[in-house]
Length: 168
Image (cartoon, rainbow, N blue to C red):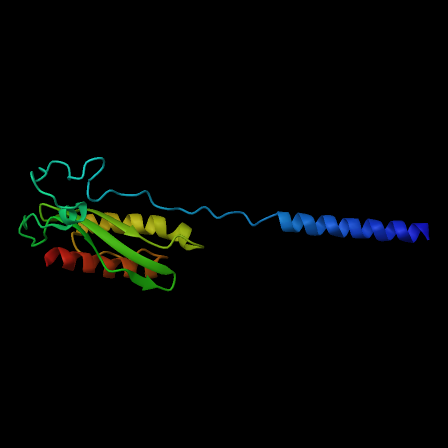
């Protein structure tokens, strides 16, 4: 009788310990590779872009200054400023591109994109390559990144919408 009681207590104690350990251990956290924030407006501490004079006596808000047209330059028909493309959904999330136009040329591009599950490892290098291609190509005709086809297609559509906004 004593042996059966000791065996039962030992078994229950072991089972309780195993269940307790299983409940206290969580899955390893997947590092979320969020891209560094890019200040396309060049606002930093000051609300005016660098190398540009802030209009005196103006009470425009920051948003109006960012999106205001300072005229088309360079013969490209693109207005200077920061322009956001439409948010384009794909099976893995939403991609939205912002571009900065100076002197009629795309000088910088940034994008928001999914950073969960496999997208956390696939999207950051893919979007970095797409951003470089955007500045180089000066158009939405960027090559798709192998392994990130949905992200590449969404990026191109959103980029085209941003360029259309800069042409308007």
